[in-house]
Amino acid sequence: MSSLKKKLKTIIGLVVGGTATFTGICIYHGNEKFTNDVLLPLVHRLDPETAHKAGIWALKANIYSKHKPIEYPNLRTKLWDLEIPSPLGMAAGFDKDGEAIEGLHQLGFGFVEVGTVTPLPQPGNPRPRVFRLLEDGAIINRYGFNSCGHGEVFNRIESLRNQGFNGVIGVNLGKNKTSDDPIADYVAGVNKFGPVADYLVINVSSPNTPGLRNLQQKESLTALLMAVLAARDKLVTTRKVPVALKIAPDLTEEEKKDIVEVITHPKCKVDGLIISNTTVSRPGSLVSDHKTEVGGLSGAPLKDMSTKMIREFKTMTKGKIPIIGVGGISTAEDVIEKLEAGATAVQLYSAFTLKGPFVAKEINSSLSELLKKSSEVKVLP
Ligand SMILES: Cc1cc2nc3c(=O)[nH]c(=O)nc-3n(C[C@H](O)[C@H](O)[C@H](O)COP(=O)(O)O)c2cc1C
Image 1 (cartoon, rainbow, N blue to C red):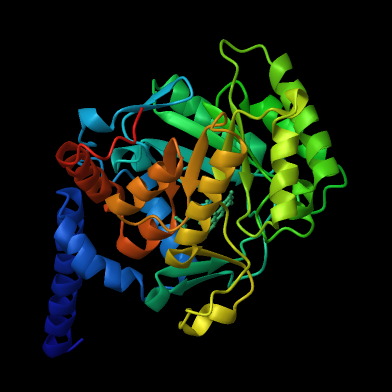
Image 2: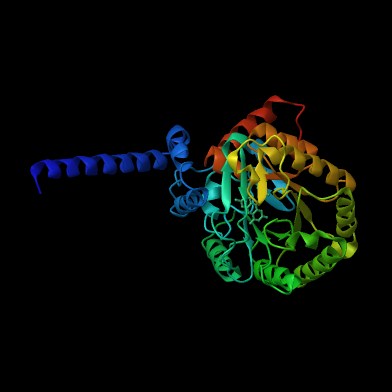
């Protein structure tokens, strides 16, 4: 090799190595500005699923371990009997396989919902199946419950518990695409995760599994909830694990009334509602190229739709069923809006993808300030 080529190779090596080391050091030392201003735009150049995988990898590798969450005493609150350091949790779908639970707590999420988990492993829909709508502050996904299955997720949560991890973990349950007994799939989820989860979620609202949302219909929902709650009541656990129902934002008025009728029946009385999943509607305001992709829309365009639904269900259930509010949250003001509409706690997903890994930290900090400043805002129990 000529000496010029050798020199060139050395220079390229130094530049690449130096950049990688600098990036690593910046992340490790928690340089939020660098992450938000330099890394995030680069990550947004990757295809969204690859970027998501990189995010999970980074959290698994504990690269944010310097980021111990800051405790804000005025954000501490309760979700059922569970003490949480912040009312803001990570919504289902980001950590489908329970690989990043600890890292997400470190980034400031008060609780983490893993899943949706299906009984058997399944690959989900073909790629591409997730799209960023940057101009709209939104995402469309049609993942279709890609899951490594109950066994693997259970082992991960159990091993975290054995290591003494005591953060709040919810497990969001689904059914396999080809299952001919959906109720049995959910009951299997309750039996498997009841002993290790802090709460369970019956997800009948994802738009990407054919027929799933029909389980929100009166008769099917009654049969499903009776079976699931009976299984939960039979579990031999130190506490009765709360079971929440996650619903879609696209329900008709009739369907909403039916759901309230079902969940207030003594044998189907769930402990909570999660409002809402992604929408199959496409508001006229969308401008991004990907707006016509098939799947569930989340992020900013979902915000008011889900807040309105929280308010409606709060009234229809006479405030007796705790609600976790989710849909389009990306600021502390959005959190307050959902809490004022009647949510006990809230979650986000899209803003984590669009605004970067420190979004929960930023929201916690300004939420704490807002709650201190305003005597009007009394939204936490
Ligand atoms: C890429 C992606 C995958 C999702 N996967 C799931 C899922 O597996 N189960 C589920 O209940 N919700 C899933 N959701 C819905 C979110 O949990 C949440 O309800 C919805 O995105 C609204 O919140 P957001 O606007 O903050 O994203 C997913 C959302 C996104 C963006």
